[in-house]
Amino acid sequence: MTLQIFWFCLIALLWAGYFVLEGFDFGVGMLLPFVPRDEHERSILFRTIGPVWDGNEVWLVVAGGATFAAFPSWYATMFSGFYIALLLVLLFLMVRVVSFEWRGKSESSRWRSSWSYANALASFGAPFIWGVALANLLHGVPLSLSGDYAGSFADLFSGYTVLAGVATVAVFAFHGAGYLTLRTQNGLRDRAQQAATRLALPAAVTVGGFLVWTVFVASDRNHNSIAAPLVLALLAGAALLVGIAGTFRRRSPIGFVFTAAGVALVVGTLFAGLYPRVLVSFPDFSNSLTVANSAAAHYTLGAMTVVAAIVTPIVLLYQGWTYYVFRARVTGDELA
Image 1 (spheres, rainbow, N blue to C red):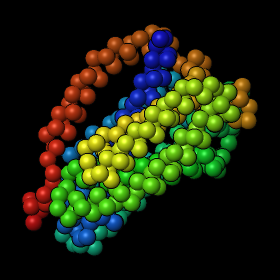
Image 2 (image 1 turned 90 degrees about the vertical axis):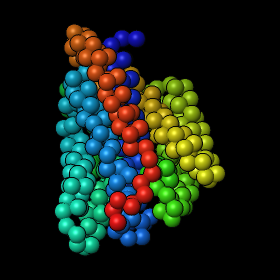
Image 3 (image 1 turned 30 degrees about the vertical axis):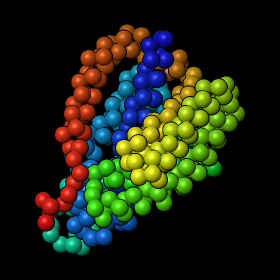
Image 4 (image 1 turned 180 degrees about the vertical axis):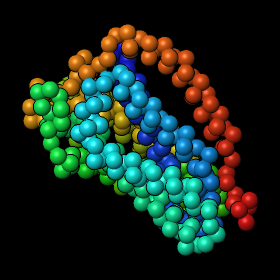
């Protein structure tokens, strides 16, 4: 395996980690208007993700930084061509951050409720845009001969990419409901369980449709073999079905773990369909950016690999320890 392929795979892994971890706390945010019955219960939902949400977003920062360093041409084209979409994501993420920090600045129920709904709106918006943006890597965007984006914001939206956004929202909401069944108790847990069972079918249908379409897009738009994306798509579908079965059988740990695996495999399916390109050009396929023509120098990739080998295990151990420390169910007694 060359360093170029290694870093392509590592970036795919970073996006998978981001979608798995940030996915459930986006999902918790989406459920704020529906599962809790009052501001006290909304406070409990905030506390379930309070210690971990900012750590989850580190995966996004690292994925962006790794793309910038390992594939500068890919980073430049994607972040310039998708500028408005990424600006919207940044806006949604900023609203979420502010909602966490400002919600507790007043005891007013209207103030707290307003920031809860702001968090929910941002938690819907950011995953939808992420789904649209990443699907465009494979579906293709207009690129010039020099690799510059030659389209408009409207060109990012098609049937396939919109389905990707809807599927991302649906599976994150389902993932978040599963997380709440692990972190809450009593009536709140029961309502989270009900939400998870209701969200299972929309998540299965939209993600299943996206996986099937992705396999065809990989062949049609990227001139790729369907073998690798098909295998990963089947594994993703199987993992999500096991997660859904665990949810219906009220086996929350099984449901959550297999849903997380399914989310990661969906991202893997997208990147498997994308390789050996990093950004498909459509309609002029010859202008596509590839792993080879967009990668940094060998020395840069080598130095990055050494740093990643040292730092990554430390980060994983620290984040794992964080989840272990805050593993208990949130009772809400401390908020009374």
